[in-house]
Image 1 (cartoon, rainbow, N blue to C red):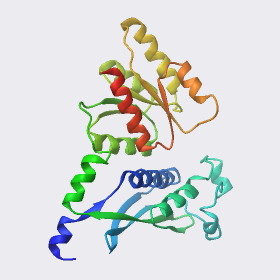
Image 2 (cartoon, rainbow, N blue to C red):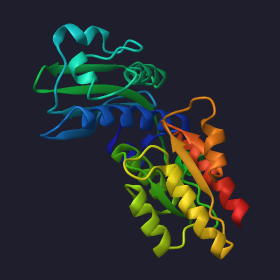
Image 3 (cartoon, rainbow, N blue to C red):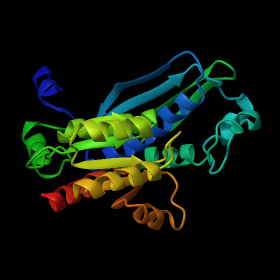
Amino acid sequence: MGEKEEIRSKPYLKVGILNRLLQVSSNLIGNAIKFTEKGEITVSVKKIKTIGNKVKLMFSVSDTGIGIREEDIPKLFNYFTQLDDSFSKRFQGTGIGLAISKRLVELMGGEITVASEYGKGSAFYFTILVDVLDEEEEDYYTNDNCLIQQPADKLNILLVEDDPVSQLIIKQISKLKGWQLQVASNGKEALDFYEMSNFDIILMDIQMPGISGFDVTLAIREKEKLTGSHIPIIATTAYTMSGDKEKCLNVGMDDYISKPIDMIKLCEVLERWWKEIH
């Protein structure tokens, strides 16, 4: 490929691949944060090679956390495997996240591996294949098939979320979509921001330390009885047990999105409510 073609052509992530990539990245970064009490976490991406009209990219997430015992690495990507019982008491989880991540990476034409030294940290690597488009193709996909399409007006969203990975993902989506986003990390901050600003929609995590998402919603609905207003509140939760959606609606929430958040679903729900209120 000549220099001119190299400049004009660039990788393009279709919507499905972008959604899978965010899910895998959020899981790996979330694990790194969870198991690293001190030190650092590094995320990087680099181009490996060009294969026809595709580019192979390698992503890495490394940390200085607790690490993984050598004998545990072969079973790391098995469903419902949680390693190191002493730490599982402190860091709860189903153990299903890495198995799902492996499957998603394979669907993107790649593979996932890990290098780790117990007590010193871990590094997860995964590859994906993405299309390379020229300028004409880029214009077509960007205009017709990509999440970067902008609504007529910009949404002003209050995100109530204590998980930094979930915050990061929604921040990136908001940047792509041109939404204005204010982040509250706990219930008290959420109520303070609600009093100070006018938001179009609230994304409300249910499980938070201190004031829960349910309690924040009840407080907002009480305040609205005095003003006669109603702001759509959309619940976000990792718990999808039977009856959860009904409980959200019963306390005054308007809709429900399960975690890990599906980027396409989030966009659809937010834009549907945007149309409802305008």
